[in-house]
Image 1 (cartoon, rainbow, N blue to C red):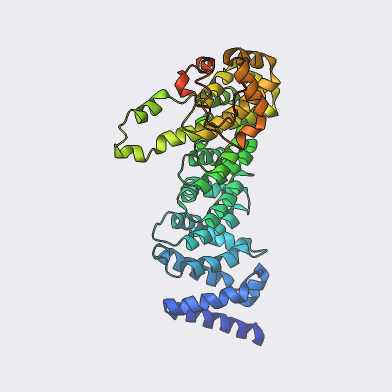
Image 2 (image 1 turned 90 degrees about the vertical axis):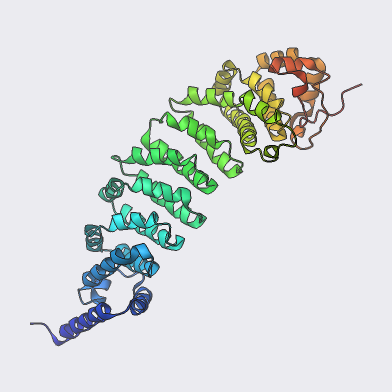
Amino acid sequence: MTSTKEQAAISRLMGFLQEWDNASKAARSHMLDNFIKANQGKTGPELELEFSQGASLFLARLTSWLRLTYMYGIYLDQQLKSIGIFLSAASSHRYLIEFLEVGGVLTLLEILGLKQLKEEDKRESIKLLQLVANTGRKYKELICESYGVRSIAEFLANSKSEETQEQVQILLDSLGHGNPKYQNQVYKGLIALLPCTSPKAQQLSLQTLRTVQAIVGAAHPGIVDAVLGVLSSMHLEVQYEAIQLIKDLMAYEVRPVLLKGLVELLKPPGKETAKVKGKAPEDPATLHLPEPLSVYIQQAAAAKTIGVLAKDSTKLAEEMIQLRVVHGLMCAMGNQDHTTCQRQASITLEYFVRTFPIVEQHVRKATGETLFQLFMRQGRARTQSPTTTNYAVEFPAFGEIAGVSTPAVQWMSLTLGKPPS
C-alpha cells in the first residue's frame, strides 16, 4: 500500500497533468515558463522526484504538442527549451529514448528547413540535436540516416545569425567525430558548403574541414576546386582559413593537383579581362564588374598562398618552380587593375629570387640589371608605400618574360622609387 505522502504526490501529479490537458495555449505557455525556471539543471532523479516518478508523462505531452504545432511556431522556443531540460539532465537516458521513439530527430530536422520559423527557434533545435549527437555513436548515425547532414549543412549556408552558425559548426564537428559509418558523409557535406554565399558559413566549414580531414584520411578530389574557389572571397578571414586548409592538404595525395591549380590561378583566362575592357565606357554594365574583381582577388590570394607554402617547405617551392610559378608571378605582377595582386606577387617572387639562385639568374637576365637592382633594393617596403610610376615601359624585357605586352606590365604598387641617374 502507498503511504499518505506518496498518495498526495500522485494526486499533485494528476492535478498538474489534468491542468495541462485542459489549458489553453497561453496557459500552457505560462506553465512552461514556470517549469523552465524551476527545473533548469536538474538531474533525472530530481525530475522524477518533482513529478512523483511520472516525469515521462509530462514529456510525452510536451512532444505531442510539439509535433502538432511546430510548423506554426506556436510557443516553439518554450517547447524546445523544456524538452532540452529532460534531454540534458544527468542520468536521464530514458528521456532521450522516449523522445527519439516518437520521431524527435525528424521533427528537429524539419524545423531547420521551415522558412516561416524564427532563427532563435532553429537555434534551439540545433542545441537539442547536439545533445542527441553527444550521447553516442548510434545517435549520430540516427541523425545521419535521417538525412541530417544535408539539412544541417543547408541551414548553415542559409542562416543569417553568426551565433546560430557557430552552434551548427559544433554539431557538424560532433557528427564528424566517433562516427566512422557516416564521417565521409559529413566530410563531403562540408566540401559542398564551400561555394555558398555566406562568408561566415565558409569560414566555419573550412575550420571544421581541417579537423574532419585528419579523421577521414584520404582527401576527396572535389576539395581541390572547392578550396581554390574560396580564395576568390574578399573576406580575409575566409582566405586565411582556406590557406590553412591548403597547407594541411599538402600532406595528402591531392598535393600535385592543388599546386598546379594555384599556379594556374596566377594567369587567369585572358578572355575575362578582354570581355570587360572591350565594352564601351558608357555601357552601364561596366559600372559593376563582380566577376573580374573576384578573379583578381583569387589571383592575389593564390600569390600569397604560394608564398606561404614556399616559406614552409623548400621541397614545395621546388615543385612549384617546375610548374613555372616564376612565370605566373611575373604575370600577376603585371595586373595593372589590382594593386593587391601586384604586391602579393612581388613579395612572393622576391622570396623565390632570394632563395633560389637559378630563379635569381632567370629574373635578372630577363629584366635587366637596373630594374632587378631596383626591385631587390626596395624589399618589403614595396608593400607599405605604393607608387603609380610605370617602369615597365622603360624595361620592356620584363614584359617579355611574363608573356604579355609591355604596356600591360604596370608596376604601380612595387615602390621601385625613382630610377638611379
